[in-house]
Amino acid sequence: MKQYKQHFIVKAAPQDVYAALTNPEIIFLWTGEKAIMSTTTGSEFEWLGGDICGTNIEFEQDKKIVQEWYFGEGETSVVTIKTHTNKKGTDLEINQTNIPDEAFENISEGWGESIVAAIKELLEE
Figure 1: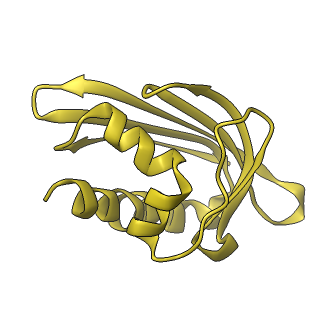
Figure 2: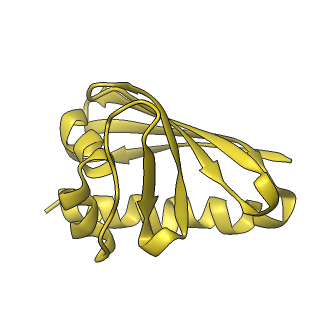
């Protein structure tokens, strides 16, 4: 199992970045697909047509999201997302633990090239 940790700068306010990760209508804007998402602890979520799904564990409004992502065969990975105010906007901190070795490359590329890039495209107009 592997761990992924990365910081990204998004030229938008932390509350906008947080909303882009928690509001299903805004998630739709950057994914192009219907999302199931709630900020209720213990609720299930689904992004990208079910490619990313799991359970919401913890929320701190505009600052922190903790989720358990599901992989096959009952394996789970914990994702902690934090937003920090930065002079350029938001420092988006991603920390994902317990990533299956065979999924690591796809996960690490997906964060930067798909998820964060799409959020930046939406918010950095």
